[in-house]
Image 1 (cartoon, rainbow, N blue to C red):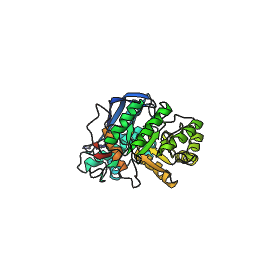
Image 2 (cartoon, rainbow, N blue to C red):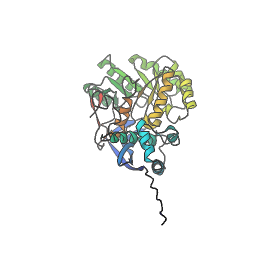
Image 3 (cartoon, rainbow, N blue to C red):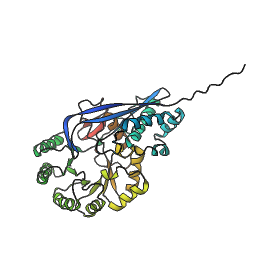
Image 4 (tube, rainbow, N blue to C red):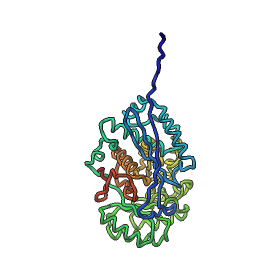
Length: 363
């Protein structure tokens, strides 16, 4: 009697679910007032173990902020399911997706970073963990903190003064303030007040592309009196001539943030760094295509003597924890990072990190 051979292919199972964060206090940004933020969570099951990651979608800034986000995320899940469990386990062993595979999804950077998180979460479970420890560093073990900046949200001068004093009381030694939205004299008044509070306080400002070339150069000269650490994105990303002039002015160190978004190819990244010659770049993994992509930016920056720091993009507890744990593995990590977004929401998922005296710690 002839027997029929049945082959069973073990596959990865992937799914997602959506969520909406609610801000405790409406957050003033250069793109308006935020009261809520959408989020998606990717879950991957293989070999009876589950990994989870957060898709850090930031409306108005993410290149994948598109109407077909959910159908494309569904297609991404199907692509993950096409992987065999052996392939998934092999990638987990090195803690990274295959670059050739993820490159096909480079137009959807939040998907790729969520999958990297899920991979590392799954790897932790495969080692007997609970899926929350993505690294084996002192930070990931809860033995060390990462210094972070205290963020000042846009608002009235009084509101900014109150925030500044609250951040200092909480132990922050670095404050980051948005500029370019209020009356400039009022913004200078806040910076003058902050400098008067502590001559050694590190002050950073972020213009979010608010100024033309001439106005940026003029206002940077005025801001120089406050001994600022840096200014992020004084001109819009499309104004490379203005950014180059700002970086070459010698008035304030310039950091590029939005300029990095949407540049996937090596030639594009090299061209930006070589044309503008910034003093810093700011890395948001959810917007840049995740860990491997961000580390590529770091290598290119360091080869040119450009410094860098890492910041979250308003992710909740899962995404923030993943970003900070990855950052803790980087040998060149230095200075204050932008991880002070963990307590923004009334309905955040259970916290994995906490801020103590101006440092982020794993719980």
